[in-house]
Image (cartoon, rainbow, N blue to C red; front, side, top):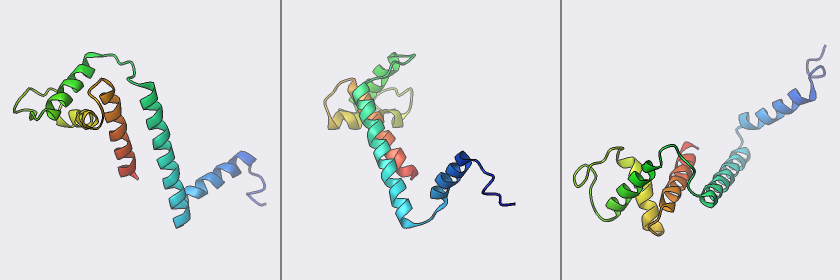
Length: 123
């Protein structure tokens, strides 16, 4: 008895989709990379359009803005001011403040930059 004839169409479709990810051709690799770049661009645009998301602790945003502002103005964390959450939390906000204007949206832009970097790094 043939095993493929007794399979449901949905299982056949799942096998086809999973076959794409197990294929090691350069063409498939480039296609999946293009899909990743499109998804990163889409989610980044949605995050920038949506702005700051509601959070449980809104005072954390002020901590990020304070740390980013101090780094942009040349202060060094742990030397010139107390840093409760670590240096890497402030760097994306400081980068966004350098790129764009000084506002609360710098937190969003910094998260988008960091998210895009990590997505491409994970590839």
